[in-house]
Amino acid sequence: MAYCDVAWPRGALRVALVTNISADHFGEYGIDDLDGLADVKLVVASTLDETGLLVLNADDPLLRTRAQHIDRPIGWFSRDYASATLQAHRARDGATSGVRNDRLIVSWPDRSQAVVQELDLGAIADMPLTVDGTADYNISNIAGAALAALQLGISHAGIAAALARFGADPMDNPGRLMRYDYRGAQVLVDYAHNPEGPYRPPRSSHAVCAALGESPWCWARRAIGRRPISPHWPTPPPDFNPT
Image 1 (tube, rainbow, N blue to C red):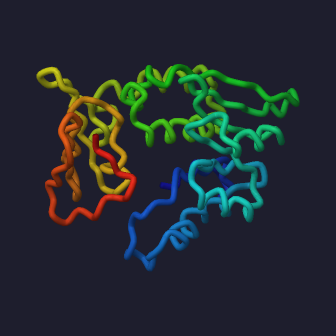
Image 2 (image 1 turned 180 degrees about the vertical axis):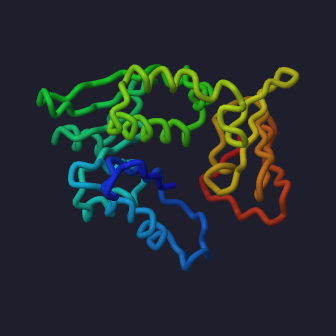
């Protein structure tokens, strides 16, 4: 997914974010492969002004490759604060965000004081969107969103407060990772509109159900195997393990 800040005059944007490049939307608008999809998503880099920040996922190998040809400042995020890409970027005083000791840590350059601040945004497990720290894809999303928010001038205290609250109420984001407790099990309801959703469910021992949108799927995490609701759902990737 790609995002950009559109509330900026003269078409010069302050921040844009690309969360990942995955097999989604193929066959639409002439996009048939990952390279084509990357081309489209990374168009957002051209909308940034010279000081704008392009936030990219360091865990995505295609984004790491494409970044070598981008001439805008980059902020890297990862589920691992100690990843090689983040470490190398911090050595150049670049902005990074990732998980260290189960907490979300951001390294943020303060240009006004010519220093790099290390900001602790809280325990990952205490952020509702992470489902007790088990929803890897949302951990990645949060890490990227934190960099984008800082670039927009939101305080780290404000970001930490939002991450500690948002997602606790199912209506915070209707249709996306809505959480309910039912007879001792935790049920998650999600739109599940692309393969990254159903094939990357939270690592939880509870029953999980993705039952909205065009591609419904249910898991019983204590059961062996999987049961697709829709016969049209694509073949799971080789590393998909529902147990």
